[in-house]
Length: 455
Image (cartoon, rainbow, N blue to C red; front, side):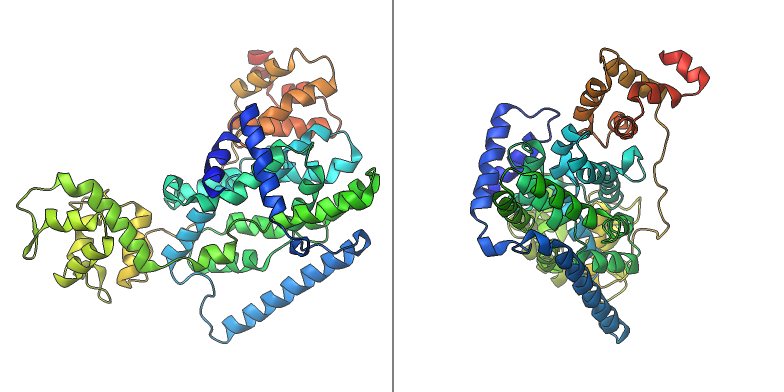
């Protein structure tokens, strides 16, 4: 099923997944639901225990974070990230899940006019930043991994796509799996300890923590997604034909949030030397045919080292160490290999990405960063007249508000909402859900000059 996860992840991100993809998604969900034991659910056995459970969860996480803070104040090292490369490895390995953030709620948009679904629809729109580029969760993570050169996801193992595929499958099959969607949302929107620690340790390493900061504030248990998830669960269970059966499925859906590899395990899997060896092996495989036969590393022909290194990066690393091309514990410039790949203009500059250069820096024990610590500007640009035109044309044939809202829903899907057109559609959908006519709202969003260009 892990091999299926990557393929399913890609197929479900089509604007309109085909019937085969939906059949695979259905089987994928049933497989993982069947693997969840009754006691796997984090939710209480009875619905009326939910408010107390929510308070208990929040209190438990708060106390655990206080203990973490106390340990740090007493001199304990960072709990999660040993260095910058460790943190960047986490950002990259978490990307398949983060880049579909909120996808499990997409199917609820069809019920925008049903009060029972209001907390779920509101949560989804907030995951989409209400259409603002600077607040859209997926766009923020796209920008994060691009900034730190962590977007090369094709080499990640299939197991890292399980959680993202589950979220996409729930969003695509909401009508069939509504109780599971509700339970998954209730579990996933609780504020976890790892989010608080991740945010703090990224900031300590001068890496941008904003994506995680946003989740801490928006998931709060007083007015945020955590309490909204509880409210939606209570409403939908009460309205179900068989409330007890519905809630049993809610509890099983909550267990899905634990499937795949969780954040603490992702972080524990990092090994600095192993990561460097993996990079060296990849570079050796590419560079084998590109070097002159006379090139040598000390007494050894470079070609023979690369030939061995493409299968075992540790062999290449050992040779570079033996010949003094790598000198851990000394200034990076003392290592001849580092001088070959950095700074810009060096003989091999560009062969290693910035993230890979940082990996070597950390392995050498430098402690320095290749990124400045300035806070990036958030993209909050206004939509163009052309994007207004596209949406107005899409809404033109719609006879009433319901039809207009239905026409906007596909643009709110996981593959679309972070695009310029999807962001504008999200704003229009939000306006429509609050009573405004999306078509008229789009026109009012333009200056008089722009309006004359598109109407």
